[in-house]
Structure formats: C-alpha cells, structure tokens
Image (cartoon, rainbow, N blue to C red; front, side):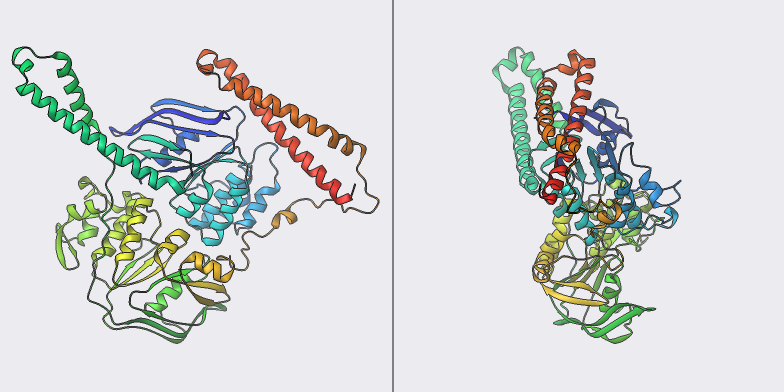
Length: 602
C-alpha cells in the first residue's frame, strides 16, 4: 500500500464545551478517491479544513508529504482583493504550473476571466474557485460541496474533469450520483469519530445500517449486563457477606459507558400534510410563450398535468426553469397562449432562494408565524418544540435567529414550513439544496407517499431518477420537451444530458486553442537525434524510478518508522515524492514522443 500523502490521526476539537471531533482520522494516498460523509453539523467541513491546514485541532497529529500540493475548495470562496476572476485563479498556481490552465478552466466553466469579483453570483464565484483549485493539477483535491450552485452541465463537466485527473480526492457532497461516480473509499464521520470503508459511496448506506444495527445490539447487551449486575449487587449471596470490589468496579464502568454512549442522531420526520383531493386535471398549458426583450425563454410549450403526476424541470442556469414553473402555477402570465390550474388546488411551495425566511425572526416565530407556541399542521395545532424535533432542531434553538442557522438548517426549516401547509400540489424549486443525504432519503419517501401532484426543479440527477415520472427538458432557443421517466430515462431518449446554453459551452475542447500550437508535421520531418535517444533511454529510466519508488515505499511502511527516526522519515518521504514526480514527468515525455513517432510513421 502506498504511503499516505496526507494523514490525520486522533484529531480532537471542541467548540463551546461540546466535542465536535473525538479521535477522527483521515488518510489519503496517491490517486485515492475518498468520500467524506456524515450528517449536517457532524464536523465534515471542519475536518476538511484541518486537513487543509486552515484550522488547528485541539489534539492529534497532521502529516503532509513534503512537496505535496494540496488545494482546498471552501463552501463560500472569497475573491476579495483580486481585480478579476483570472487574477484570482492565477494566484492559485504554483511555480512551474502551466499558466494556460487558468484561462482554459475558466472558459470551460462558463467564465472569461474578466469578471469582477464583487459582481459575481454564488454560482459564478463557485466556478471561479473550482478553476483555481483544479488549475495546478494538485496531488490532493479537498472539495467541500463542489456542486453547490452549479447546474447540470457544469456538474457533469466537473465530474468528467475530476474522473480524468490524477489528483487524489477527498470529497464532501450531498449529490448522491456525484459521490457514487467518483469515490472508491468512504469515510463516515459520526458522533466525532470516523469509520472507513474501502468501497465507494454506492455501498455506504448498506454498510452504515449494518454498523448502527450492531451498535444497537451491543448497547442492548450492555443494558442487560447492567441489570444482571445490579440484581447480583442487591440479592447475591456474596453481596450479603462481602462486596466483590472487582465486580463493583466493573458495574460502575458499565454504567459510565452506557451514560456516555452517544447514540446516532435521529432522523427527520418528513410527512406532507395533505388537503382534499384536487380535480383530475391539475394544470394545463396550451402553446404558452414568454420573452424578456429579444431573448425567448419559452416558445410554444404545451402540457397537461394530471393528479398524482411527478414532473421534473431540468436545464442549465439561466434557461428559464423558474420562469416556466411560475407560468405553470399561475404566478406569471405568459405573453401568449393559455395556462390554467385545475379545480380545488391547494398549493405548498419551497423556494430555492429561501426568500420565505425572515433572517431576523427566530425559528419559533418562523414556524408559528409569531403566534405563540403552536404550529398549525394541516389545520391541527402542535407544540412548536415537538414539531421542531421532527426536523432535528434542538429545543434550545427555538429562539435562534434564522440568520444564525447553517444552510442545511435553513433548508430543513423551510421544508418544515412548506410541509405544515395542507396541500394537494407541491411545488419544489431546488429542494435538495443543503440537505444531508439522510434527509434527502426521507424527502424522497415523502414524495413517493404523497397522494397529490409534485412539480419540482432540480439539478440532482439521482433525486430526479428517484422521484419523477416525467421530465421537462430545455432544448435551447426557448424550446422545452417532455420526456417520460426520470433523468436517466431522458438521457437515454435524447442521447445526451442537459447541455450548457450557447455562449457557455461547458466541456468544449478549448484546451487546443489555449495551448501553443505545435509545429505542423511535414513529409520531411524526422525524429531528432535527441528525441530518438530519449525514446531509447526513457523506458530504462522509468524502470529505475519504479524500482526506487517500490524500495522507498517499503521503507516508509516500516513499523514505528516516524516515531523512531523522524528525520529519516522526512528524508525518505521527500525522496519518495521526488521520485514519484520524476516518474510522472518521464512517463509523460515518453508518451508524447511515442505519439510523435507514430504520427511521423517512423
């Protein structure tokens, strides 16, 4: 096994008297793809910041291979102090990094490099930050929610870019498909500690459930042992004569373990409050159209949505998904054509911009609308604390201002508000934003059990596959088409996924234009003496470097090497990193010469 490029051991960190991390560990070796998963608030982002060297833990050890390049993507990148996006990305390049990659990656991500940081949207800032961490082609990428604020074309391009990269990866994401496609190992952060599985996220949930079941069985056994020991203490023959101090000590220890055991965080109780049944026809659009200036958003679109349908709307950012949604539900009048709702419609909505939340209100005031301690769920009163617990809020958070909640907590709060309304039509605009995977599972189950109609906008491919039975997809130039099935079914029918709008061209081969053009081969072009010599010698050089790396790797794995000889460990680590770099350069040079030789027909 290759030595780790980055290693965290026994990491401990406490905030405000409550331990956040209690012995957490993380190991990343060359080329590894690790998914870091856990509930919102479990400390994933903090652990990633410790790995990046941005946060100092209270205890534990952090080791990074000398010379290893590490790039970290925060959830909220800061571009202040840079004239434009190109300057921001170039500042992330190291000595010897190819400068063309800054402009190339910006263009691939739909930017041109001249954008002023103060005028960027959240999605544009995230794209610039992605270009900055990808440009140096680092040894390790630490990515915290890289798909936040990205649309489907950008997500699929980013997935392809990372998959083809040689960088090791530690990934935090709530995008299930993204995690499944990119990870080969999974680290689960739960109640301050980490567990590692040497398989990708695809197998995580089954493994997690097995671990929790075993833990519950162990706790039940401990509970029974305590009961048996307590019975012995009271009624045992020995107890009436002389206390067996060893057993008394063991009982005290068992009681302590039972008290201190931190049970798994509960699950969100997601249940929609259903109104009376709507009419069979929920909404209908007949050749509706909408334009803003010279730009056509919707062109002659028609659809009939029946009771019980689950409809997804997909397209790149700026295509007009929310505009189309608002026309369908009657919030926006089309320029031409007709859109109407059916009879007896009771609608609940979830806004992607969290606009329904007043940042100055407390959680209690938001749920009760400022009227005491009662939440009316489908017209029936419930105490606000009990309803808060259904969505994993602590009682002491009742007075917390919305502005102080995390993104995930705001998402759960808005979900709680929406689901309290009696409805038979649920309109969800980016409902998966900031929700953890467990909450997403329960939201999917709720949609599946919901007797009404669901209309949703989402960039989450897996969520769409699990929830909708038809997809409205953007085709360009204001045209929208309805496809039966989920997102994967749409891709199978179209032969492609959601594409970027013209002008963004995510994924286009701009690398060729950005790189210096190679000299054109002519009939007289031949390999130079230097090139021929390199072709002959490079395989030998590669073999020598591979043998040296193998030898150094064996030495690095010597038990207690670092403890016994820290200086020798550092020296060997540096030699290993240097050899690995030289091997990569030699392989690339040999490959380029081989391609040239084949092109010339030598």
